Image (tube, rainbow, N blue to C red):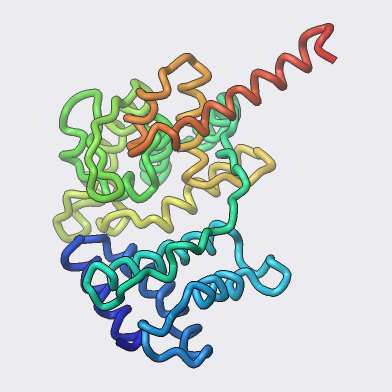
Length: 301
């Protein structure tokens, strides 16, 4: 079986049988397209001829001769795609053995999530003021992001009915997993203000849509627009640093843990499938405590 035929079969499998999201399938297509091209460059036109050294060479090719061409996390993701392909071929009895099984991804350095302080977050939220329709919508969006820890894609995908139950929002996360997250009074007030004063007028300008957050023409707010809203708010707040939609999510988790929340509760609120992912945030709070201790205690240094 040629590399192209193997990749095509695997993409059908993950799309139809496993029902993976279109973006995930597209990422597999890019990764495995690069892998198929690499195999052809090595003169391999049959997947049965691929060996463990071939897969290892692909990983080294991604990193470059000096190991800096591609980040370790990106190499790890592409190798994960390659391993998925080979496991599929073994399970489908196209191959007798998996040549990728012994190839280990590069070690990742521990990257702590970047959160901003409570005061900095307050400054960002206060920077979205005014009575203009766009300002009311933007304030509602940012308050909701910080109140719930929602991913930006989850926020812009919200429909009005997802907030029908008072005090909570229904978020649809990765893999279509749904979770219920409480919404604090500040976010509820901002969203209610937007729903009463802005959304009806904007909704009348476009085709009927259930979307919670709209643009001035009545269509669903895009991720790109949400990014611009956050960047503009950070600039007006004069933080002196770049923040992204994930900064709100990181800050949500970090501030909850610093306030005494149980890590498993935060796991549920974030929609993490493993508590180990959430525990990374505990390292951030410990670092903060250590910094405060060193700077404040008379015998810490």
